[in-house]
Length: 144
Image 1 (cartoon, helix red, strand yellow):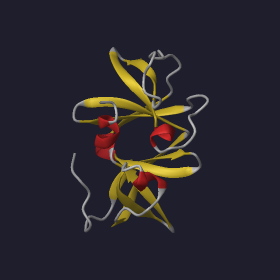
Image 2 (cartoon, one colour):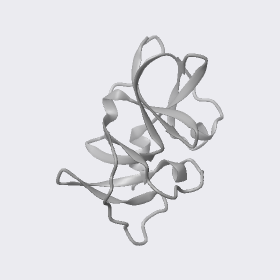
Image 3 (cartoon, rainbow, N blue to C red):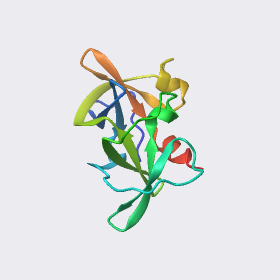
Image 4 (tube, one colour):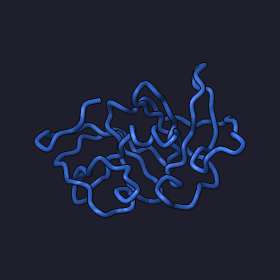
């Protein structure tokens, strides 16, 4: 994983929507977007762990980013973005995967919901808006 730098132009990010907001992860950490029709709920698991799923023979956790960000838990999973950090793959339940875009100009974290949850590495400019880039390492660490 290579951190994006302030002077780096054209950082590739995989963008997705969650609770009507756009978020991103660095493309180097995104593995695939998919729907998990079948997963197993884990009894007594933390509220942000939706369950475990089989991804081509590997069992991976499905995390609810809404809960990690302090939003109400989702009623059903729509799509998931599989990400990897420190050789650990997890699926992030999202509303909609937008795709891969090249974003410019790093902006330091501010006081938004994501930054308050300590999940953002920074923000990248996308037209007139800025997109929080989530720290996949911190998300993976939320499992421990």
